[in-house]
Every structure is written in structure tokens, then in C-alpha cells.
Amino acid sequence: MENPVLTIVVPCYNEEEVLPETILQLTHFLSGLRDEGLVSKKSKILFVDDGSRDQTWHIIYKKSLNEEMVRGLKLSRNVGHQNALLAGLSTAKGASDCVISIDADLQDDIQAMREFILKFREGYEIVYGVRRKRDRDTMFKKYTAQGFYLLMQKMGVNLVYNHADFRLMSKRALAELERFEEVNLFLRGIVPLIGFRSTSIYYDRKERMAGATKYPLKKMLAFSFEGITSFSVTPIRCVLLLGFLSFFISLLFGSYFLGLKFLGHTEIGWTSIITSIWLIGGLQLIAIGLVGEYIGKIYKETKRRPKYVIDLDTFNLPVPRPIIHAGGSEMELYHRDMGKLSETN
Image 1 (spheres, rainbow, N blue to C red):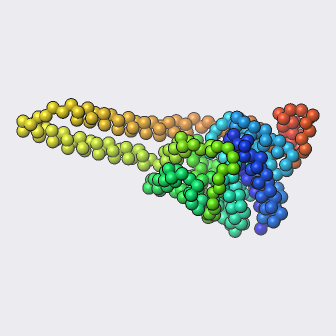
Image 2: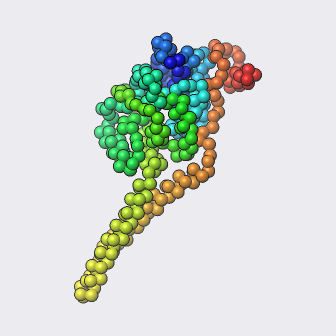
Image 3: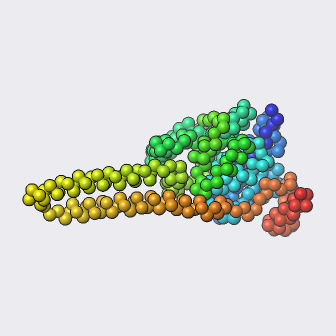
């Protein structure tokens, strides 16, 4: 087959500490794939800046000017990892036969991407990168992750176990991905719904090179909750069952105390009354909150607001040229290049 055009999409948020090394490793790796004849010479790396507050975009932009393989996409504000990743996939889709997504910290093994390409050349449309084990995670993170996958499985959601967002997708798979228009984005659940011929490549996850993780416990829990409520109505059904159970128990206790009253054994028990009120009240608030979460998601979906806004884009610029420091500001250079691109079109 003809060598496929590959784009490696790398979402970034405040990654100035790791980005220089990440760019170095990825460009070296992609050069190797090109030299082997596994991918086209037109293959690129697209770094997506998700509204970073540090020098992330400055690093990306400078590299995109003097490194032929590097391109950049700057979002107008922080929209979250999933939307930033989607922005990169959508931008790269038109000029690529396949796209690989990988995080900027390079904890995922870049050498596994070579296996991704080999599987793609065999005819696979989607290739998942799957961690062999979680030996580098804390005990808490390991068991909560296992619990999350087990819970999602019980709810009937098809997830690839121990897979994050390290994957290859073909142009055809990306075209189908665009048909999933939900605002509440959970790509780990959406991609398996596409179907097509898919496989998994197993790898060992590395330590982060530098900087702090962008997924602390709070974000991880929020992301997990997003996945659960975006793909399953089981929590709502559980609340309904809990309501029926509470009603049934109330009937039993009501019948019991009514019987005591008729038998003349009435007992005053303020503790039991208050406990019952607080218990039922708490369950009601939980139920209302859960229903409200689903209603909030419906509200967001009906607004149909854009998932992201692109501020700057060097992906479709002509072949980069050396930086001329006396040639104006970074923004002036960018708009000058965009003007040249418009003239050529």
C-alpha cells in the first residue's frame, strides 16, 4: 500500500517543562518512521494548546516556524482535554490517512506507535494503546480505576480496559466520530461505538518526565462521573429502585407500628422519627441532585454551543521558514503567513 499520511495529535495544557523534550522525541521518532517507509514524508505532529497560561504556545509556535514536521493549534481558552483532543483530530482529519493521539507528558510509550502503524497497514481502522499493568499508580488510584471499569461494565458501557486516549484512528473512523455531536464528551466511550475493525497494542507506561500531572484526584473523579452519566441511565434507574425500596420498607414499618398501636403498645421514639426523616430527606436530595445532573446535560446538549474556538492555526500553513527576529512580532509573522496562504488559495 502507499505510505499513509500520519498526524500525531498532542493536546497540551501548561506543558512548558516537558514540551521541548517531547518535541525532540516525537520528531526523532516520526523521522524514523518516514525513513523506514512506514509513513509518508507529509506526516506531521500537531500540538494543540488548550488555553495554557505558561509558555506552551510560544514553544509550539517557534518550533512550527523552523521545524517542517511540527504544527500548532491554539484554542481561544481552556476547554478541557477531551475537547482539545477533538479539535486536533478534526483539524488533522482532512490531510491525514490516520491520526494517533498521545499526551504531551509521553508517559505513553511512543515506540508503541510503530506497532499502531503496522496494524493500520494490515487493515485495522482503530488501534487502542492499552497499559499492561498499573504498577506505577498508587494503591488508591489502582483500585479506583479498577472499580470504575467494573462499574461501567456493569452498566453496559463498552470501554477498553486500561485504555486512556492513546490510540490510532483511520480517516474513515474520524469521519464517523464527527457524527457524534454530544457536548458532554467522553471519547473513551464514544470511539468503541464507532465499530470497524479494531485491535489493541499493550505497552508499559512510564514516569512523567517533568512537571505535575494535569489530572489530580478531583479532575479524575469528575471525569469518571462524566463518563458514567454520559453513557448510562442506570444511576437514574437505581434511584427509582431505591425509591420503591424505601416505600416498601416504610409500608412494613408503618404496618408494624400501626399493629402496636392497636395492641396498646404505643412507644414514643423521637430518635427513630428524626433519623427516618433525615434518612429519607437525604435520599431525596441525592435523587434530586442526580436527576438535576442529567437535566443539566440535556440543557447543554440543546444549546449546541461550539465545543472549542480556534485562535491560531499553523497546521495548514506553507512549509515553515527560519525565524527572522527582526521581521516583526510573533502575531505579525503568523498573520503574514496566513495572508500568503490565502493568496495561494
